[in-house]
Image (cartoon, rainbow, N blue to C red; front, side, top):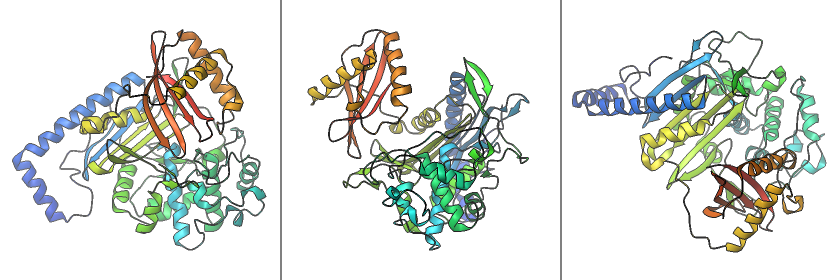
Length: 478
């Protein structure tokens, strides 16, 4: 199923070393036999893992690439890009980007900054003068870093919107907090950034990307989504309904033009992009520093997000990553900078978590990159634990008090809270909370507990803002 990964003779290296040096290094490797056999063993282990995960997750099609120190170790498709026609996934198969496309929107914005058309410190109202006056403190930088306070609203997925109609809809959205106060993921903010580029560049942000990013980086098939165009190698997106694979739900064409993640790209395109990120291509080094620097909140605390990238740490190593989800597709892209390791995972099913595949591959390449398992740690704040145990029982009883919460999304009490109530009641009584992790995310204290509920071990995660109110509440099987 799918084409085999490129062999070492086909795709020996990516980067800017001279051909003669490449040939000599590779020849020495072949003669010694060790690098080739080591990579072959690694490929076999990754291949077995991906096949097992594809089967476990019931994913129709998967595309995976692994790049280590500039060398493509794996670039391979598994399963089918289209079930109806039994078309296999290959490195040329086009998947929808989902929010992985946000890092490309950031590129389009920074191109406008470098062209002198906009400044990161500009108020967004400079370019949208009919926006609410409460938007005046919101800058372009706030939008790029999800610190604008702009909430996400519910668009009519069956309606076509013009750019002006998108803008008018965004104007109706409430602000969850003053700009810069905290971080909160906002698709609406990136939709607005796309509209901004459309206005100041005199063409669509997708055209900007096509001419100034995709073409020079050799992303030969990356493009905006179009239902009307004939698009070679386009994958179909799927979802599970009562355990049965179904086609993705239809949305209006305009919903696939927005800059929060409406792109097609293939594994080959993403390998070219990974090369460009290595080289800090297209933009100046200063712009790349902005893109890959954690945002500073108004308190001075930092949050691990730049411009379209999460910027995190694992076992002392810097990790740049982002994922995406949209219309029956899931994507994940991880760069472990200390190991010069990049992992790309593209799926055509809505439900699975591609990060699980990416992290599993990372652990195969280097066990030190495995996600640390949760285990008990000393609990130095028993009063917090006691309060959160009470909160958990309130969730079980359907008695969560909105006054104890701050900055949670509007759907939390209408959708998430009833789900958690049903989950807890179905599992049975909960045991004591066992603290497994405590961290700071911006100004929030985030606590992760392990709690036994019936026969199921749950992961219970709660975030508290400085005044003690709850800003995040989540339960999931561990």
